[in-house]
Image 1 (spheres, rainbow, N blue to C red):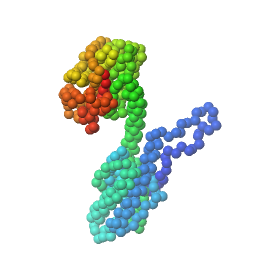
Image 2: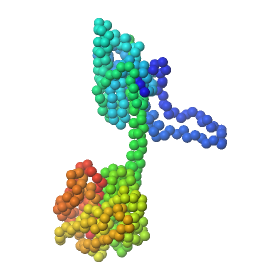
Image 3: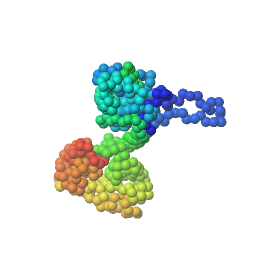
Image 4: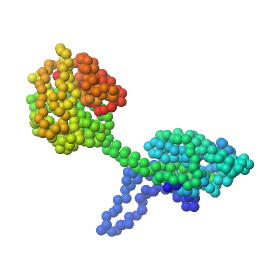
Length: 450
């Protein structure tokens, strides 16, 4: 495809996605009514075309003003000539300022060949005293300066029209210029000095991809919001006496936690971290939580529930998706916790009357080995003790250390965690880990009061 403009058959700028035509099937009961509802992409592209038209009109106004300021020649935008088309080869000279942002493209000034002599004389009064080649060089520089000045002056308004963009210095081309599938809105400016055309070209193929990406992001956001509404909160289960901080890196978070009642007054606490950060990661974490809930409803024992989780995860995702996890059952009556750690950062136990303790991994991650039997250890507890569960993103938030190296620092800094209200404990743990900066991974911190 090539650059503007075909004056012989100017295409008026219209809404190309109007669906007000009568149905071809009116009165035919045997034929279904065709679906004439515009798709989201059509609606968005139609809106963007209107934005391109606005940008072209703004550009044309500033081009005319710049020409008047630099040469005294008078040109006026002909709003009735506004049209949407692909670029045609009927141009003697084209100046472009390329831009990139949400939509890429270029602002352009096109000089039709039949307007060149008049513009030379009107904009460059001394052009007649120059050789033809010299006058064209001077005019080329003049056109580039006009476009550059017009874009800079119009940029604030253009930003409102098409979003924030980064512009490059103007370039000049003569003759037939080849481009990929780029469309644009064009407007003719005319006056005693001749005529030229201003345009805003937009990469509609890239815009289509952007629409698809926006739709996918919206689906992920809805999935995230739906999942977030299902997360158990401290006020939902006050007798569980816990606080939690959950910070997903993106909409498809791979970290998961859950808190639930068990028979005989016990409370179960589960935390997991699915490897990866894509859509399948979010699906895997949601699947783990759903399967765990099924096991709880059916009163399946702790290690048996983990075996089922392992087998189902392998069946759904194969060995391409695995998860580290820690599952603790706290019995405040007996003063103990039964803990199964599957390749996860250690569960920490802080006590007012003793040094911190940890329960390190005693099982492989979930979803790596078929038909695996899991084991758990019993940890004695005292009233007032605090348990801290977290995912590795808590210690790797700076991107500089692994959780193995960061664990001693967290333990040392959290020794007074028993003295703060449980409502604030998870937040304080995150403050200690300094996760206020932009994280590199999903983060969950779960604090439990015994």
